[in-house]
Image (cartoon, rainbow, N blue to C red; front, top):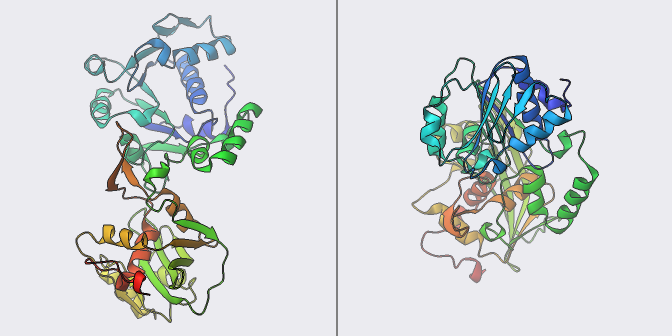
Length: 401
């Protein structure tokens, strides 16, 4: 069987406990997984559980996809297809079951060598907790394919960080793949993609680029921010500078902002932003902000040793203040501005403005008041920068400007 595979498939031939493909539509995730498993099953005997959280009938499984590929590559003489199973001449077997209603029978299954979890973003933590220890054959593998939906989905948090990047797990191959990674991406889908980007860019980023779903009603600064190319007016108040420190996969950030008190507009002019920034490299990062060595900035007080180090390197920086509810107070204060203008030089700030959001209830699709702890590092730096204008008691400062 000489399968048609995209280039990223080469990485999946290496044995790993978890093989994860995530991203938007048109990337050939499911097609690639099906081809690789059929190829693997032809070479040696394997027992594959094809599953998803909910499967009420075989029609809701990947059964039909596997059958189509078997027909495409003329493997009908090797694989025998029934309405419930696919069996190879060497004993290879593909089984199809939904997790939610079959979890007890799956727990008792023996000899599972591979699990293909399709639409894995819907898999509950309970299902994962039962499934993982159930699959214990030597060299057994989980093949996980999904389009990201919510930052807090159990599958997402298992393999992807809050910034949308693969976690560094020694037991996993985690690949983000999109339409650009599919050399056979059809024109009919390209037309659909281009149209959706024209009419709804946020939805297009979810559908085609594999971003978590953006609920515009959940966006914390909905209708409050714009992106513009502007020059700093000398009559504006500021600059105000704030810094947030990177923890593990989180970025280190410094933000420079100004306030036009006449129009009650917050202007975010510059950002310094970097991942995996070592302590000794922070000064070089912050020197991207021309005012950083001349204006007092506020840094996250959870890392006083970092604040002290940066201060010794010539930056007039102090630890910020925090209090119970300071995040909510800061957001409320920022929303008192008539407008927040983000400079075109600040792509990370723009990204966070789009995705910083309130949690959406998964069952009701209603927006809650719970703030999602993601896409907030730049906003935290803004809050620290403006801490002297934010109080826990009231927000009347701007109205008196």
